[in-house]
Every structure is written in C-alpha cells, then in structure tokens.
Image (cartoon, rainbow, N blue to C red; front, side, top):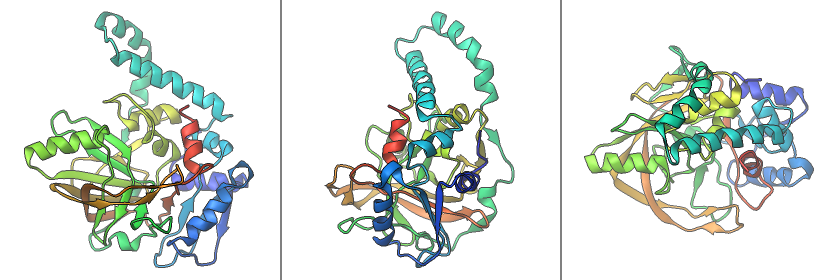
Length: 334
C-alpha cells in the first residue's frame, strides 16, 4: 500500500502495535538518544517511538520509524523486506545498465514496455500542498526539536533531512539525504560529499558566482525518505523512484521561494540558500563506526522560511554502532 504521508504511516504502525508514545517531557540534548539507543539495541529493533513533549519545542518527535525488518517492509507495503529488496535491486540494476555502455538501438526496444508504467508513476503536482498550510518567515531552527545525539558531537544535527536541489544548467533535480549541523537559529552546515549530486550542482553555482536555492523536506512518506538514500544512477529523480516503490505517484509542489519541487506530503519544508563563497567547520559527529567523524569545512545553508503542516511531526534518527535504524534502511538496498 502507498501511505499518504508520514502521519498515515504512524497511524499504521500504531494500529499494528509497532509504535509507543512517550507523554513525559524529554530533552533533545542526549536524553532522546539515550532512550532510542537502548530501544534500537533490543531484540528485533524495538518499536518506533513518538515523543509527544520535547523540551523547548512545540512539535512531537518520531524516531526509529523504520528501525526493524517488519517496519521497513511496511514502509514499502510489502509482505517481506527480502521481497521488496529484490524488486529494488532489479530496478536499480536495470537503470544503471541503461547508462553503462548505452546503445540507442538496444535501449529503446528494452525501455518501451516500461514506458507506460514509468509515465503512470511520474510525480503528481499539487497546487495547495499540506506542507504549505503554514508559512513562517520568523521561525528558525530553534523552533524545531533538533537532536544533539552524542556527548562530543559538534552541536545539534538534522539527521533525516531530504535536501532538494536543481542543476542550474540542465534543470535536473535531486533529493539527497545529508546531515545538517545547526549553528544558530538561521544557519546550518550542508554535509554533502564531493561525489554527491548536491555537491556537483553546488560547484556549478559556485562557478557562476550565484547563490544556490535549496529546500529541505522533513518528514515524508517512508518511500520518499528511503528513495533519498538509494544509490540511483545520476539523473534518475528520487521522486520518480519513490513512485515505483509506492506503486503510486509521489506528490510534489513548487517551493514558495524558488523553482524547486518539494515533496508535497512533507511535515516541514525549510527554504533558503547556500552561499557559494561561505564555508564553516562542521562536526565532529558520532558515526556508525563507533567513532566520531572529524571536523571539516562545508558549505552553509541559510534558512529564510519554514512552511509546514498545521500539526506536524518532526522526524529524527540516530547514527552509531549497529544495530540502528539506518541499518534496516540499508538492508533494503543490499
């Protein structure tokens, strides 16, 4: 089945006994990580956790939503994760094969049977999306329950951000997941590596001497969230891939401050830009190796506007020694 949005998935988890609500106030600095870490290390990955009262924020926080084999299968509407993983592997392998040693005479006949399916799953544009029910130019990162995960982390981090960017030359769009360290109410580090599409697009803006428009989606349908992490061929839009995963088109909407397309079902959209001439030190960050990744310089995201649902849920995860939620997400791509 295709979930309408993150909250539809939350309702399904709760109905299946896969979610626990925590009604007492908890601190986003270290305390949520300590609780979530213990739960994630329990047999089977433990339940998803919805913290209803997070210190310093008006928004509830969801963590470990995809932190088990059963919930990953649920995220794809599949009977088992192995079944869906095989489908994902077949689809990604086919897409890569079209780009490797491309032969027009061979590729067109092979692609024709798939075209009706691809066209039927192309993202649908929404004029009045849920992610833009509220537009707020005053709210900043401090309004969100952003986690500080580990004691020696360089600060608080957005750990499930879907970063939406566009190639200024070709118009090709990308949705990638890159952690973001919050520096203050209006700025955050953009941790994209040189081999990532976001970094490639950024270099083109830098060469042109232009600011790069960026929109960050928080809290999407689980298929969209997973698609942002999948090892897709360059040029294959994650929102189209999400449609294949869902068996139904993903929904998109135009951002309010740029021509970027964003997931229409998101809980929050953070709109802003990255300056081509500005970098700041990012890190350390507690990683899945059990060690802290080192400090390094990365571009800076400037937050200009938050759009959101009327009653949004903030998504988060933690990274550390397995088992963790990201392990189950990676298993779908093995």
